[in-house]
Length: 560
View (cartoon, rainbow, N blue to C red):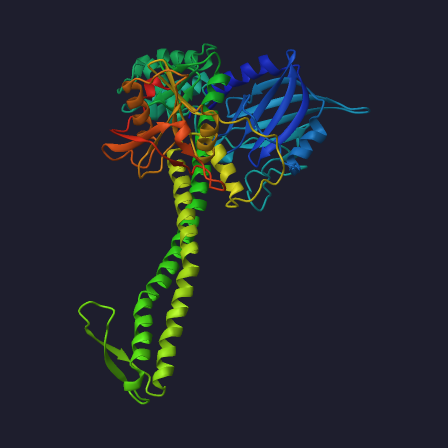
């Protein structure tokens, strides 16, 4: 990521043009690493996002929604105290370092002060530091003399920028020329990165292309090369773009020959980081939900294993009843002290001889009662286990259906209602504070042959899809696999076979069996699909159905 001085120079110019003269309206700190400052500038409210995360450090104008915590952190309170109502006078790059300075004119009832907020965009060392007259008022990440003897970031201490690296500043043309004279040949981009300050390796690769990607020393051409370097770095020309590979955002650039174009460096940066943060948040949330559901599945599987074990312990229940009855029928031939007996079992057609163990300390009648008691206990156990097993199987199937929906999730929209479903099921704690009800997440929508095909994203959506359907609509679901419910909006028209097959292939794609070959998909009119009273989300029963054998296919070209 070229978050270097070359890029930040263009960012500073754009921020200054947009925000200079604006007034601070509001300051929030949505997370430990981010501070958002809302300005009223140019007749509208704009949000300056300042992020110090090691992987997402940046300063840009952004419309990405953020939620303020219930209690503002200390640094946020400090900024509110010193910058609320202040006017931003200038945004500039400090020297040719990765430091942006935001200069404020702060006027109170009886005071007036000039304060500067430094945004140090330096990867894992990124920080925000507020100063007044060069003295630190506060920092997002403070460090004392004991923690860092080279640079102290603590209230009351004089602000000093980080120590410069052993590299030439491109603004110092003589020093740059000296470094270029020393180029021994080889990888020019790596050489520029190691010898010129304020440049990231991606920027150095672009600069090396400007210099012809040469691999031999410059010699007498060093002067011409230095002029090209200076012109490239300090030109106001930009070609903002997000570099994509396989559709995924891999980098953003202030000047790039290809990629996805944007009107400003700020817009390209915001789009790139917003997408990356969204992907990170999606992956983290999906991993969290998967952990909750996997733990739930293990618990239910353990419960089922115990119930099956109790069932196995009752496997000889009928044999115990028969033993009791045979002893009772032959009690005249038995006596106390016998360790066993062989009696004819008249319960089987061949009337075999059955060996029955006896307790020699008990009378024949007491032995019979012992077998009856064991039989009755096993009978009660099975009666108690049956509904528990049925409930446990239903719970496990429901958990499996949520795991299946989670495996099909592709973005935050897919997780939104699934998370609500988990909260409703008590698998996640309720939200700490009430928020406005989020708008309903739209169904996946496809068009084929003039018909609309809708697919649910999870159990909650599957229920909602069913409720929204007309009796004549065609409902589809995979046979013996968890899948999305799919609906063809018929609007009273007959559905052609090719549309039906398309919907079935979409249903197969959004199922557990999509990695298989052809799988069966059941379909019927909505009127034949019922949701039993009290059934869990996504569970239905259906009749009058037919089955298609299809290969999974998303039909992305038909997706709206």
